Length: 133
Image 1 (cartoon, one colour):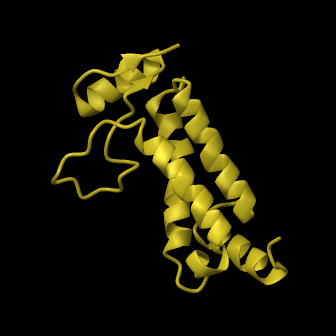
Image 2: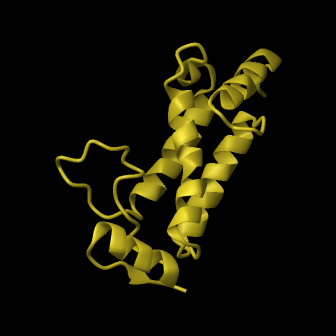
């Protein structure tokens, strides 16, 4: 159970990060996992939808780095959940270039995707992406 104080702080931090919806820790973790499940099945949208949906991980990073929230000590269950889903998502991504400075979840394409996203990834990143429907 999350205390009302940390829940309020979490929701305020979500909105402070530019999100119009007030999401709880559980809702943020669930959205991240839903996105990863969609990717495990062969994400079937275009790159614009993919990047929009991937923004939940950007939000997570902002929240993890918010010193006032101190989620690593206050919501250890949430941090563990995020790390578990992160590991699943990393397995879906192409290997990272050694000189890459971007966020690990943004700087490389999925290994496989639906036809439209696979084509978008090939155009943007080069190389081939397996098509799964």
